[in-house]
Every structure is written in C-alpha cells, then in structure tokens.
Image (cartoon, one colour):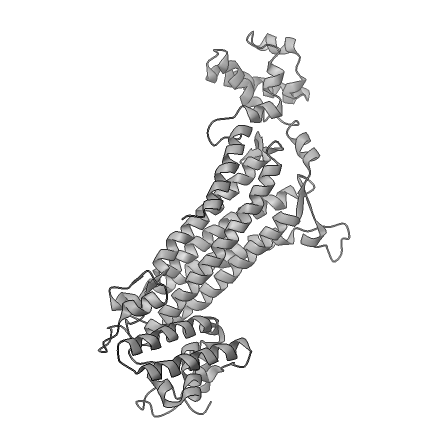
Length: 464
C-alpha cells in the first residue's frame, strides 16, 4: 500500500501498511454489502426527492449500485485491504462506474450512520431467518410429541429418578422454551428496526434531508430522535446477543439430554448413522457429535455477549472506533445460532430413534411412583405428611429387601395401613401415574394433547 485516499488533504502521508491492515474491516464487514447497497439506494433516492441532487444523478447512482450488487453476486467484486471497509469499497467502485456523480452519494451521510443502518438491516433480516428456523424446529418436536403422547419416560430432578412423564410432555417443554425465544426475537426486532440514517457523524446535517423518506423506503418502523444516540447505540446488538445466548442455553440443555439418553447407561435413544460419528481407534463407538458441538458452541455465543458488554461499558458519546468490534461478534453469533438450529432440527427429524421398549421398562424399575402411594392415602383421608413419612419407610424397607413397590403383596400393604386396598396396584402403575396428573399444564395425557393443540395453534397463527 503506497497510497491512502480515504481522508482529506488534512493528511500528508499514507497509513503505515501494518496499521492499514490493523485498521481495515473489509475482511469481515463485506458481509454487509447487500445491506450497504440497499441503504445507499434509498439514500440516493431521498437526495433526489429533497432536491439535493437531480433525478438523473440519482438514477445513475442507483444503476451503478445495482451493477455492483450484480458484480458481487458474480464473484467479480472482491475489494482488498486498501478499501478499508465495505462502505468505502462500494463508493470507490461506484465512482469508477458512474464517474464524478458517484462522489455525490455520500452527501448528507457519514459512515457512522451508514454502518448503523447497514447493521440494523442485516440483523433484521437475520432475526427473521432465525425465527423461521425456530418455528421449523418446533414443528419437528411437535410431530414427535404427537407420536409419543402415551410413551413414558423417567422424569428427573437433581438427575435422580423422580416421577414418570409422557415423552410428549418432555418434548413440549422445549417447544415452550423455543416459543419464548421466538417471541423474544420478535420484541427485539422492533427495536432493531429503527433508522439512524441521517444522524450524520453525530450531530445531523445542514442539508434538507427527509429521514422519514429513507426509513419508509427501507421499511423501518421509526427513526432515532437523537443523532448522538443514533450513531452510538448498540443496545439492539446486545439485546440480540442476550436472546442468542438464551437460544443456545435451550439447545445446549437439549443436547445434554440427548448425550445422556444415547449412552449405554440410559439407552433411551439410538443415534442414526447419518447423524453420528465413530472413533478413530475404538470400532464399537458411535459418538453424539452434533449435540456435543452444540453444547460446545454455546460458550462462544456467551463470550460474544460478554465481549460486547465490556466493549460498550466505557464508551463516551458518540461514535468510537471500538464499535468496529461489534461486527465479528454479531456475525459469528448469527452464523453459530443458524448452524446449530439447522443441525439440531436435522438430528431430531431424522437422526435419532426412541427405544420405546427400553423406556417402558425404565419407568417400572424404580420408586418414581412413591408419591402416588402418598397421594393414594391422602385421597382416603390420611394426612399427607403422615402418608409421606409412611411411604418413606416403605421405600427404605423395599431397598433393603431388593423389592419394588409393585412387588409388595396386598397383605403387606394392609399391615402398613388399613386404608390400602386392591386398587393400590392400579394407582402405582406407570401409565396410571402419568394419566392421573391431569392438572393444567401437567403430564396427564389429556393435558399433553391440549398442550400439543395449543402449540399447533400458536404456530399456525404465527402472531407475535
């Protein structure tokens, strides 16, 4: 690099080559090129609309910008470090294509409000794509839930067997988490969708621009009311990274369960070959790489959130070069979320099978029906705390003798308490244990079917 044309004649010499490379963002903010061109087209049309440039000049600018868009799609536009960033790269190429009129595009605009506009256009688009992915993943989980309403699975607290639940009920818990993710992104999108274009470097502009015109053209819902805030605000990016982190929390929790379920110790699911890998040395292995990678990638999204919070905490108004560092965090988080959602959707749609016989066996080999014995006695007038203590003693006795509650004879039950009758065996049968938990939102089969229908209705309505 022997020449630096970015700045005015204020500068007598070019940047040091190493500093130019250090300063450049073109290596990653080329991601914004589509949005930069779209924003620039709107700006050019507004300049003509307000009489700042002529209609003919605006038409030349728009035609040149669309030519750059085409060149980029064809792989013919590949600016280097000397362009510094995508905004300057586009402007330089535009001037090459349309001549001096290209130099008029930047009238009444700064790179500060320009990059803010591009980033919001980008993130708005990505939020829409991620919300669509969330919906698709929910549909996959719902289809599985419909098929497994009466499939039972051990429910856990503290990773200890607690009570049996419907497998569909377990899956619906994640559908609900994803629903909150979908709603949260919709709320954030409204705050992303505010235009800073026209705020200038920090103080607005002396030109008679029409900020509402560009906002309407770009489908923004409003404009920033303070130019200082408009160019320096990154709350929307932090909010997105918060939401992205929560999405990854949910995907990571689900991943952890798959990893456990696929282990020989649990044996609840079988991984299909197309979504698993093997060992380089142990031929018998089948590894759950997809959920392990999702679990691992969660940390990088958390890190980007923390990084942006630290980046912003000490910045004075208005724009500072530090803000260049928001792009890679944002881009990588978006790409990570989208890749993880795609992989998990494929895994759940076609990459695993539930071992229903193993699940049916699993819910009969523990004491997860103990609470139902206490409930049984309580329903017959025995104070619950008294019933609770009695059942605790029974479980301790069973553990000592190697028996389960279902193995006890009726005579044994009746020696424990006269309220026990023949129907105790039905009360502690796993299917009955689950079916009777029919309180709103519970795992009872009727409630699970209602939950599936409610979730389907939400997805079909698709309203925020």
